[in-house]
Image (cartoon, rainbow, N blue to C red; front, top):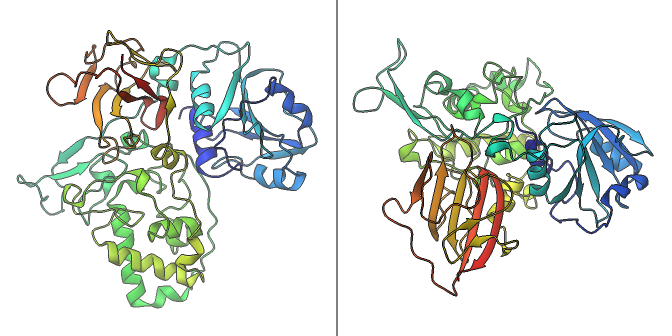
Length: 462
């Protein structure tokens, strides 16, 4: 997993306070360490690298910093040291988050001379921070492939049914499944029998996270025949979805990511309240993307957290479990939509391009931030692209160029409408993109990879 994922999930999971500000106000951000309330030492659950978080804002107290340090990122437990800053003997750089606010913090990345820092800088900037590399940092561009991890595009896989299973629903009797994080195989089958979880795990950052098993073996629900029937149906629905790639012991490479299907005697009890509310559709998760049910073996994610062939039935089950916990939908009225920076990305308001970014009179496309895998030209006022399969082509997309996941990213300086080696034009499907109109304003949106924007700005055509 790429090093940028730490910052993405710090933002997504709320392990620090609001991180939406740019925070680039201090002339010497590194001086913040002198005023640290304390620091938190932990191991990054993605890269397994040792890192440090420093609490430098006036709003932090030793108690709130220690509480944050208990879970500095998903799956990690930190060691809080009060009253001192992070050590800086051998670091790749620092990420200053909300430097001008009371909730300011600094992430300190340890490393060795020559280590690549391109993904660290991206992750820091994406979280609204300011990255300052150290002299040890090798600022290579990474070829648009940080740490070699690339989003593998969706593919529809068709295969004969397993021995003993009925024929598939395709014309030739095969079972066809979208090999995708939001995909599902046919009802009554297991997703991992018909698609690769390794591919799915490339499409969203995965991390192991343990959960506590608290359900008693003599829980009265287990004696309720009607409840058990619904529980088994819900389990079979999840089994048919790509959720099994991260939420089962058999597929998760380093252990399940929180709740998991083998957790007995009732796995749904391992969902926390917010997760249960997302399953019931009480907390919005649309930014994660979804296939239409008719193209996904009848499975829908509209208004529910996990794909299902019967949304009302799935919602009713999880609403019942929430009621058992004494919770109502009103308890989640102020809960932010799931998705963290992905949700922020969809409502991002672009500002004017700087440093020559945009498309010039000769058609040269210029951006900053390194090689890209997706380059968009959008109408002014268009929504920002989100995740595939349903949010990545917003209305107002004039041009989109994709790069093969097997190749390095494309460098800034290509010509508008050209298709260099290992690239192809998605929009328009055929022919040249529309000519730019002098004096009109356009939206340039460039991504290092899915979920990873590097340039998002407005420019006026010459």
